[in-house]
Length: 220
Image (cartoon, rainbow, N blue to C red):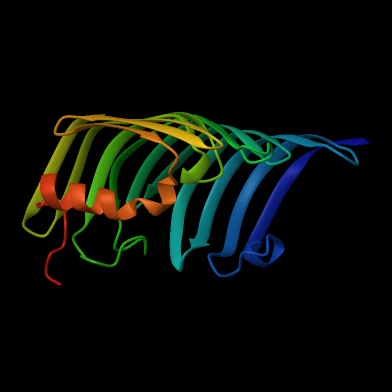
């Protein structure tokens, strides 16, 4: 067991190799202060600083401010990104340490260009904005428990625009039984039974084509 206080400065550090996720995570440059303790089983640190550069999926994010507490695989605090292709204000907790995963946060995205961020390559003009609240557990859609809300969402593609003021998805998942509740401006749906959310993507694709044709690429 030992405690520490100090500064962290890294330039072009290969974080992806360290985390064994080099296919999606690349180099990081940051400057931060940290104080906390470490033992054989635990690591806890209060961190505050700036990430000048961070490569994710081949895109170089810039101007990231963070202030929060890192405890093992949990982050509880704030994250602000002021990048040419995304403005994000995140506040809350993300816990990857527990078996189920815990998410309790709000995120305000005033603008994000999904094409530039290499998140969606269907349309160079595809931009989104939204306010999200999440209070859920789960490692994937298949075992999602909790609720995710989107408020004042705007999706824009070339010559297409869709605005959704209120969208909520609540899921209650247990072995052998799942219940899904969807509420929005344009659609309400309830599903209950023994199904795998990851296997019903065709159902949601049909809903998108039926109710949101302005957002779906039908060019082929």
